[in-house]
Amino acid sequence: MKTPLLSLCFLLSSTLCGLSTAQTKQDTIIVTTEHYYPFSISDKDGAVYGASADKIHELFKRSKLVYQMNMMSWNRAFELARNNADTCVFSTSRTKERESSFHWIGPIITGNWAVFGSPDKLNKVTNLRDIKQSSIGTEEGQVALSYLADKGFKMVTSTESVTTFKNVAFGRIDYATAADTHGKKIIAENNLKDKVVWLFNYSSSDYYLACNPKMSNRTIGLLKKNLREMKADGSFKSIENKY
Image 1 (cartoon, rainbow, N blue to C red):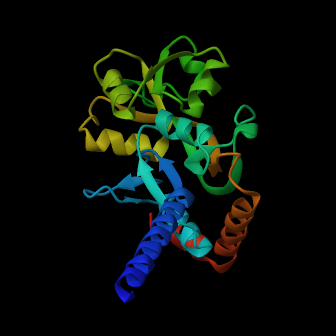
Image 2: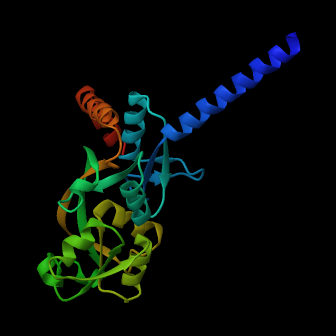
């Protein structure tokens, strides 16, 4: 009689462990982002770090929440968070059009939007009025796309920022727009400095962690509370200063 009883206990234990594991997986929050220097960067093993990413890591650690951070194209990262429960995306600009689509936690960082073009335009093209009739490239899903399109600019999109900058270098489009630090990094990494340069900044934006509206109010409240504590105890600024 002892053996069947032990077997039954083992089976019950295994079943409960399976349920526990399944529940843990179900509760895992997916955090998506894009390659966006210096806010979110990945190393050779795929681990995500950066001025924004490190803050999100610390925030979830303090909140004792199980999460998984994944890097992908911005358009995919944004749509996954917009359409899937228990999913968040960063670094996300908070706009009127996006307001009702997410819970907003932040700001987590601030960045500048810039225009890039050929070196012969440096100090000659200094504001958006100078390029009103020109073609401007950016990545699909970027807030700069709607911002400039609404002002009547001719926008050309690509799936990756590096494609946009190479299109400027090869004369396929006139200008590119991106975050100033991100654009300068693309130029350096792809040896484009003789063909594409920073021209001017035209706007700044606060960036947030944006979470699907189906995420529980308790979780959102916990994240907001711990972000306030990070700002109060200096760890928030300390992370930012590393970059």
